[in-house]
Image 1 (cartoon, helix red, strand yellow):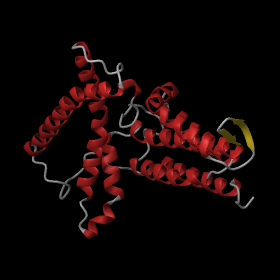
Image 2 (cartoon, rainbow, N blue to C red):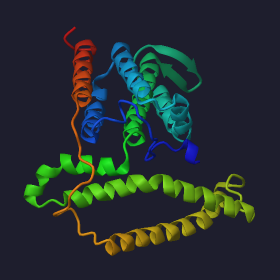
Image 3 (cartoon, one colour):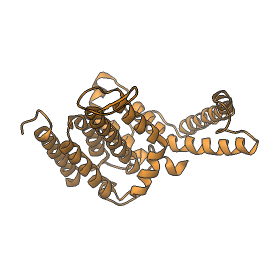
Image 4 (cartoon, one colour):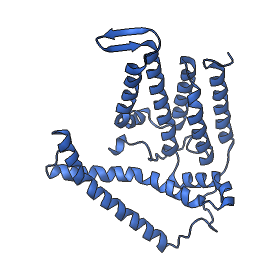
Length: 269
């Protein structure tokens, strides 16, 4: 299960993406999430796909790892595709059998929306795959620092988000251990009716919740024992440094945005 979990997991490396400032990576991902909706034809989606593949190659994270990580949510991508395929009634009729009608626009939108979903998954996953939780916390805190003027708890929010991301792989690992322990005691998670499967999940959820609350209590006790008092007056051992590569990455994203605007349907070209 851990090998198929990509979100919230960090992979150590020395690539140009790993060395980038976490602030630039956060801005990069946020802007990418916005501009991905500018694509509406084959050319613009080809530009986004090529750009995403280039970033993935620069990160030096194995492509096989992304494929394995995609498997648990592949059903959602397939469901999105068939939802557009069977319920979109625009365009020319391509296939007709009984009550099933498939139109050209349904195929087009199914492919494009599924591809958009995959691109978002890959790019957002790269943020945690190439950034340590500590660096991610510092980046979020620095970007939200202007909110300190209105007494917004920036440090606490950044710490909370970082801890949440950090414990996603831990909880998945804990779930796998509990499942193996329950299976050794005769619990069947895959067989039987839907009612039986729901009943089989209860012995899994209860110990998982207990261990999660216990882990949270231990973390809170450890922070209090070390004198944690929040972000006020704290110094940092690791200082964030904005490098030319960070500026170049945002410039490349701006160039992609311009290309999407030029080549999208209804654009300038």
